[in-house]
Image (cartoon, rainbow, N blue to C red; front, side, top):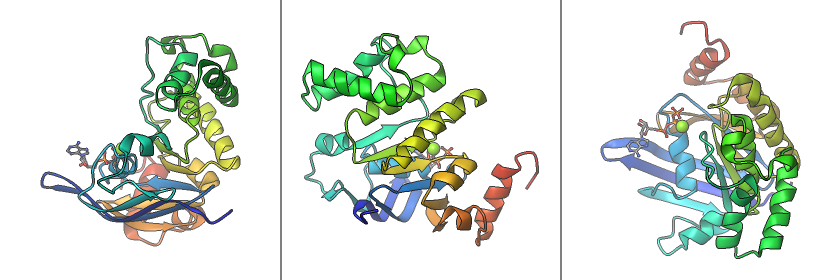
Length: 251
Ligand SMILES: Nc1ncnc2c1ncn2[C@@H]1O[C@H](COP(=O)(O)OP(=O)(O)OP(=O)(O)O)[C@@H](O)[C@H]1O
Ligand SMILES: [Mg+2]
């Protein structure tokens, strides 16, 4: 690990009207690290990722991604965003475009790559997610898990500095979750820098370098997965984990 900072969030505040959603978040991700964010519904996890990708504008605080301050009012948002891959719960593919075209369109329009180069890169990434044979399919002809892997390949085709995942497996049938997690695991092993909001505790435990537990717009606890998931210190973390790890038990 080179120790190079890829994402630095400091003192981040975000409110929607009266509702304070992020109340001073600090976050640090180094090159090649996987940071998993866990926490109850409404705790601000998606809002945090959306701020990092400038889909939301924070009121206060600073976000630096690979050396450029994206919260600087003069930043070129579109340029900054091309370096940040985002994968959502819903796959957000273009339904009228083939898989291959889904992977080339932003490369061509935003990065100005030629047809041949963009298709070569698209095919490399499709192979990486195990979907080389699906390049001519339309998204609707694929399973949810396959669509999500296409979305991951599309993000990778832009050569991002960091990949943000917001509950990428939550919308999937249980039997399709494993394939998507396997792709993410492989990416992590290859050294991709990743910020992952997930309810998959086993994945977080095995793959994350750092786990961050959020509740009520603050980071309640963070550390190595064996610490935060295996031996949580804060009452709120314990309560949350007992709910997600034993969903049939009350309280
Ligand atoms: N655009 C918006 N306008 C108003 N309120 C919003 C907006 N986006 C999010 N919120 C509110 O902010 C709070 C945090 O939402 P957020 O989606 O970040 O939570 P989350 O931790 O991702 O939850 P979940 O696990 O359910 O996805 C919620 O109370 C939500 O209703
Ligand atoms: Mg969310």
